[in-house]
Amino acid sequence: MPDSPDEGIDLAYGLEEKPPLTKSFLLALQHVSVMIVPSTAVAFIVAGAAGVSAADTTFLVQMVILFAGVATVVQAYTVGPVGAKLPIVMGTSFAFVGAMSSIGANSGLDVVFGSIVAAAVVVPFLLGWQFKRLQSFFPPLVTGLIVVIIGLYLVPVGIQYAAGGVGAENFGSMQNLGLAGLVLSIAVLFNLLLRGVWRMLSVIIGITVGYVVAIAVGVVDFTPFYEAAWIAVPTPGRFGFSFEVIPLLTFAFLFLVSGMETIGDMSGITAAEGRNPTEDEFRGGIFADGFISALGAVFGSFPQTSFSQNVGIINFTGVMSRHIVGIGGGILIVLGLVPKIGAIVTTIPSAVFGGAVLIMVGMVAASGMRLLFLNIEMNRRNMVIIATSLGLGLGVATVPNALSGLPTGAQTFFGEPVIVTGLVALGLNTVVPGESSPLFDRTDAVPPISEPVDDD
Image (tube, rainbow, N blue to C red; front, top):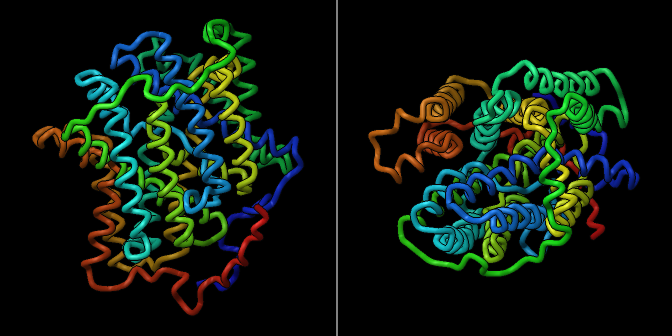
């Protein structure tokens, strides 16, 4: 095993570094541009399923953006024990869409928000509070596999966006594929062939060029911008709160999934430095998942969790500064309070984002692979655990109907590829004799990375 600290990627900016303000803003905007459409799409989908008015739909979208910004800032800078001091961009995960849509349609949004508040406080708090006892169950073998499956199961989402978005009349058209291919090509070529700011901003440059071309060919609809208001005021309890047992248990399961995704995403971020997250980073990140989700639900926001696409940006561009992500959180807060500005982003066609999302989710999977290869020995035991975990995780992701014979609750729980992969890896690693040989527990480990300067 190499004894050099160069097992992370070549970082342009480290965790505590602060690039010049203009560059920081553009890098932060790059993070925002990748996550805002899929995150707000969740609000549109759930609002449609619940049958709420156009005004309530707009309000839900704005609260999702606002509290994504609040959660991102808290992750970057922390509030007490809440937050990881890592460049974690937060947003609403598609993992919650199915449950929120069905519960919202059948029981109402009051039950959705009541269940979120209760589950978000209890599950992440217990997971974070007891993480010191649980940490031994999450060695690089387990967290690395979680990172890999997060990237792999999101690839179809990227393809759907690249083709125009699910339900689009021109889904799979040459126009959509061309726009996605243009964005993807620019991002890859700028990243591999250029240096400095051109490489670091490769994703947003690709999106910008794709957006300009989309406007030129007449596929951009500016109606959302014209119809958006200038100011959105957060209103607590707008939809009310109710509690039912089955929805509550469903969201408890989903917050366990969210916690495992956050564990994997944090591991994917720190893998850029060639290390695993510390106990405090793990605990603070999980706390933020729960407490900001609970707070947001009071005001009408859906659950906030780490956004895996943005982990891919960090590994793709080599920019790990938490201060850049903190600026990105500030941008989201402004967008959440000023709908007119936020609406501009929602006019960008899905195909344009698809080209960027594809490379991002691929980088998430690649960072998980690096986490595995650098931290564990590829012996028979570990390879069997990897094969079994990924096989089952990808199986339920690609053929969800295979679980149709299970009760509804079990389908929801075991239909999540992240939780299946994580639980199988955790279980096998715990009961099968032998060690996964985490790198940082060995005498030939990479020298510890010096502690970051706390300049908050």
